[in-house]
Amino acid sequence: MISEFLHSPLFALPLSICAFWLGVLLYRRTGTVLLHPIVTASLLVFATLHTLEIPYSDYQSSSGLLYALLGPAVVALAVPLKQNLTVIRRAGWPLLVTIAVGALLAPAIAVVIALLLGAGKSVLLALSGKSITTPIALALAEKIHATLSLTAAIVVLTGVVGALAGPPLVRCLGIRDERILGVVLGINAHAVGTARALEISALCGACAALAMGLCGALSALVLPLIIGT
Image (cartoon, rainbow, N blue to C red; front, side, top):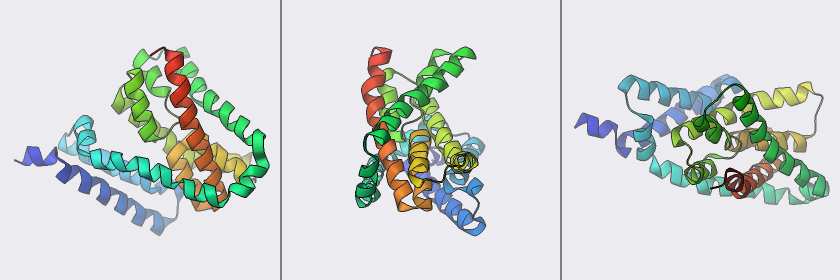
């Protein structure tokens, strides 16, 4: 009975919600980006699954409702994009070209580095979707026959690291334009980076949402063709 409960949505969904709620409380109390709710919630869920010896595949299948809500959550990011459309239009083609090139280079560089380090096919396939948001990455992983759990882990890790390291790195380079920062976060840290960008400003979040959406669309169109599936 207990084993069935631990592997059911009745346990997985409250676990995810409570972990994120605690993460939000800790983030608001400390104010440090290192304790972003995505980071702390992920660590809490990981610690719980490891302690109770629950396979990630079981947790993922039990969290189907949360995965289903990822799509509407991503679509909702179009709101700040619509609100700042006039400002974004001024950048025009340079912005679109930058996003397109970044969308292709971000996964390509990661795959090349992993290939040089001797990574196997499963790792390379999972890395190919590292710069797109989770719902698109998981759907694409099924299409190219990548490991879902590894793909999800890489996507989340990429988003967290990008959201944490992106803003200070951009500032160190002397870049103050919030549009550039938003594009950087959207390309390299997808949904987590976009959430971080929205904390900075609506314009930064709008650019991040645009970059994330275009990266997802380009990857979904191009990646299966490159891999040949």
